[in-house]
Length: 416
Image 1 (cartoon, rainbow, N blue to C red):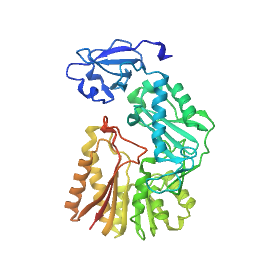
Image 2: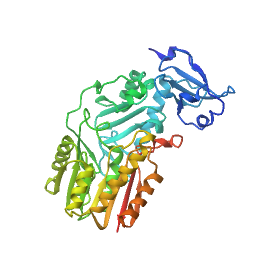
Image 3: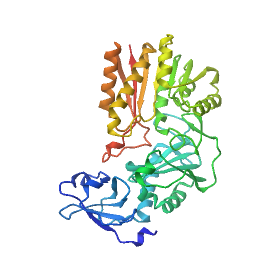
Image 4: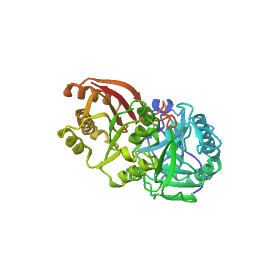
């Protein structure tokens, strides 16, 4: 369907519902709209008006999603045409050039903020923060990994892929899907190559001079956890000579950075996935630290209990669990899980050791997380002092109009 040939449709908000959208929040839920024409197709361009008829914004419609309209432009005369998408994508790439300066973004690039010599993987487009709600694009060396979390935007996939080819000059573009989003948006997509040549199954990228093997076809997220890049580097600065426990290690990110950059003496890596531990082992070998790397497969809670019961102690414990809740109704259960994980981690931590504890659950606020740490300190009889409060790397910016997208929290704590 060629959407630019279709007239836009005007939708009116219910009384007293317009303020968030005048303030540029990009998500219009179904309950905020007064009435929707029947059989309005997904992808239709919408002109959003207040109940008094005042122009609010332009967006794209999806009848299948609770986010009925995603807003992109607050200019009344700006159609959501190819030129609009081109300008947004170009703006996102220009921002990344401020972080990754080199001959080609980001194949051989310096990271001036931290003094790293080379970074070959980064986020190019971060959905709402780049004015492209429902689109995430990561670059791994010469390949792009794309996620659509909006059906209305995905219906413009051909244009977006063509613009990415023009502006980012990749060798290939792969499509990745996210668990739970397909059903929520009514998307019918499969992971796979959508343009160009396929990447090698074992593609190697570099961050902060550490080499990582990534799997763009079956790896987690778009292939790896680029958002933790600078947090891995920061933790490494604290762990010289430390024995470190890396829980939920996945590809070995924190542990291998600690060995390679920080001079840690030993890492014990825990994950429930055999394939993740195999990947982490290859990364340890790739960085010549396999002699100081030991892995253990198992449920994190049970492994921590076993280590506690046999009296194992570590100088640093890193907790980087997967998302523990996707709904507000499950939030109390998630907070109990965070509490249990952190209390168990403190039980195997030497006095004066470091606890690095993370959450990628967007519904968990920083206040929630800090209160959990306070409760852990009280119940364990230990003193926790927060040394650093960190988030995602700067190529994962956050929109002040959509603070819900600030999902990643990383706390570096001293525990006495």
